[in-house]
Image (cartoon, rainbow, N blue to C red; front, side, top):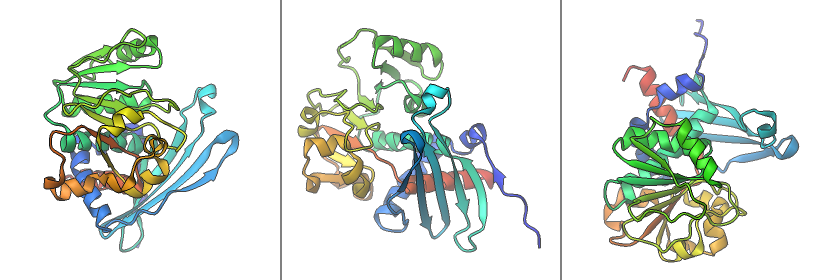
Length: 311
């Protein structure tokens, strides 16, 4: 018996296979599966490459599917005019171990990261957001902009960059991806009171958001993924209920929380609230910090499998 050649999908095809609405639904299921150990997702293996690059090996398995994400992160590629992330996500039959299909790694990473933020919005926002602020102008800011445009098509999106010109250039390049896209054009500009959700998407080592916490404003931290990185300041954290996507991973990677010295016993996982909505804090500011794990890539592969089957 001969087997057909495994299908490999490029970035554009991968994007079509994992639309945001379906991905958010899949992540809701996966966060609960992971918390209840129906998905096995061990700590990622990190191997060094040249010029401070790293290779990341991230497997995850569930009764219905197994995946392995292998990506290389090479910061020196910026000077070469190349993407900093390359790699693939492979999906396997959980019974036979046969390869089912291969997706573009950076695309899966970007979209599932934005989708977990959107799951946070669905779970923690006090009301349907009308205005977002994205802090950052890189690839993840674009992923989040696209997710907001798809899931909250009437929302206004503000963008704040490390310099006003960066925000202006980002908005000029991506007009049309949101209903109303606007840069914060002055250095140190005050964040409009009307902003419902702030999403930090930088690799900063100093807080880029440290405002007084507000019950009507959800704050999501995405970019800081090492103990040395900080996006959300201790003022905001100290006045808020704290939640994370992956409790085990956050203790090692959530630099905002680590440097603020938070009491981890008081940090909740999003799965606990999804499984029991009565645990959701009422009328209290919330910060949701994400660090990601391979279980979220498995969720993306579940969506892709459904798309390929015509479901």
